[in-house]
Figure 1 (cartoon, rainbow, N blue to C red):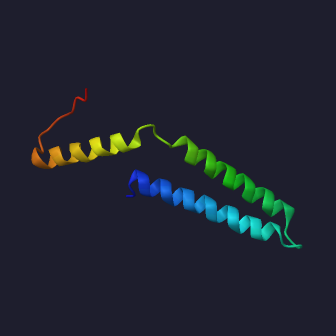
Figure 2: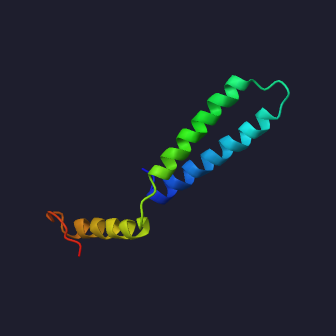
Length: 84
């Protein structure tokens, strides 16, 4: 399973790569408008998904998640956490 940062990076790089490939394809004289439109929609949807999964203060939540995992390894009977 990818970490939050790795998943964000992978999605961002994928979007960038698709945009670059589409720009190159669209510049060709025989580019099919339907394909360009379909790819633009795909890129727009991926961008919306990327923007939707951005979590404010994600770095703080990641540290908390790691600490909770460490505590569970120390005490496997731990039932829950309270964060103040």
